[in-house]
Amino acid sequence: MRRALRSLAFVVAAIYGCGNADGPVSGQLAVRLATTRSGDRAILLRVVGPQQGVTAPSGSTYRVVSDTSAAGDTTWIAVVAPQGSALISGELARLTVPDPRRVVNYVVSLTDVALYNYTVVDTAGITLSVVKP
Image (cartoon, rainbow, N blue to C red; front, side, top):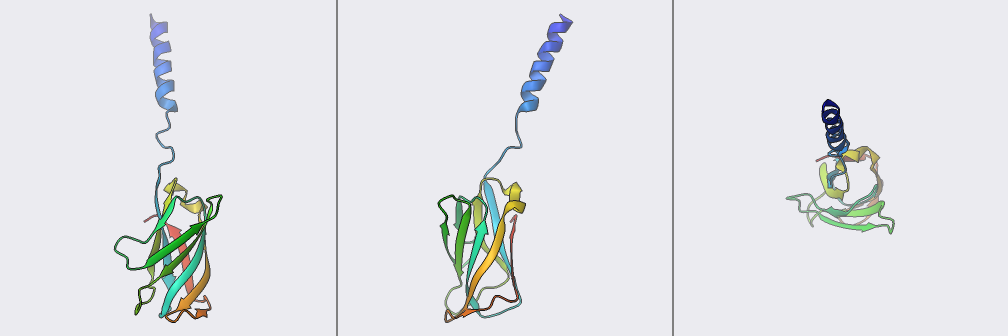
């Protein structure tokens, strides 16, 4: 009888112990801008890492347009501030990702920056990062 109870306890422990409660859970990451500049109205960036969608941050007036590679691991994102305003330090876009705990696997790079008249300018003084919101 004790042997049967031990066996049952082992089976129950194995079933519950092997369950993966910490598996991937879809969520969001944020692309953040840090800048000392003023007057930049549009930015084009590239994010490498699997994504399921890109949106503007909640409450933002930015217009966000994205295009993802066929493999789904690289996304180009254009963020444009409304006419008469400029991009400011803070959140630029939200990424819907398969597992936000893997934030360190995402790489963001700056491609282009444009002024209010869409003249492309150098990218000095701009830093981008992908973080948990």
